[in-house]
Image 1 (cartoon, helix red, strand yellow):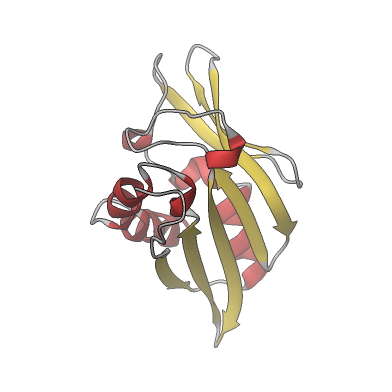
Image 2 (image 1 turned 30 degrees about the horizontal axis):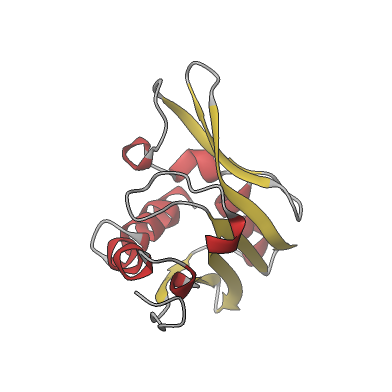
Length: 155
């Protein structure tokens, strides 16, 4: 794939029965409470995945043995409305530490009735030679849609 080829963003959403402050808190501070161990990229047994609550913070996973793998960085941190994360995983879900090839995951939290509409957009796939494959994976049945359902259940 050409570095200039456009790959459509993956967009998914869910509405949760909580105000934006709670929805944002569960997505960020409570990330380990809903992210499944089946989506681990680390050896040594999954302990949890975390988002550090500040711009420049790490988005990372920790094993039961204390080993940490950084999945990306917090690019924008605007509680309770929006967070943007870089995604350093390649098409094989292995870490590619070259930030120039990172894709982005933006999550917006918008009041809707008595709840919050949570909209996720994963974009920037054209930065990677394997970007179309990544988009296919995160857009598939076990990708962001299923993850947002787990998140909604935790809220």
